[in-house]
Length: 143
Image 1 (cartoon, rainbow, N blue to C red):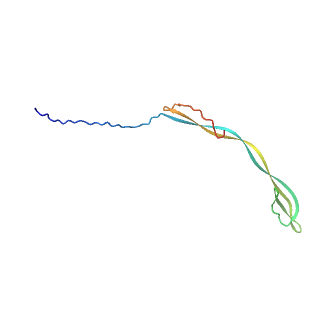
Image 2: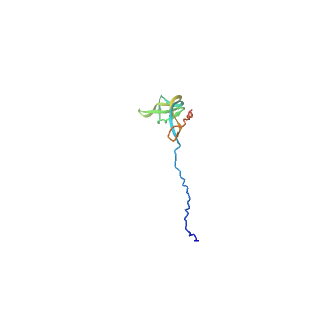
């Protein structure tokens, strides 16, 4: 008997490899709408107003030098002098101007527009359609 010949046999070794990847898929989105509401608010403000009253007081008194401006209570006294020519020269205080300050308090009502923003958030599906419609909360700074 003949010995069998040895034939070389090649066996392939196969290994599978897994390649994993990812890609973005749009599943939804959000839309934010902002609305501005304008309101007119009435406010009551205290105002301070200052007025002056002028009173001219005749004096006609001879003085040696012009008197200085002075205060007398709530008044500011401003002397007004004139030179008169006589045999001798002298200063005559012709008058004083008394300036009195008076303060009055009054109230005024103003209408002032006040703005408030409010945001509405809507969820959208992958095709951009609104999928929920929430009611906005009615809360603001000035309420």
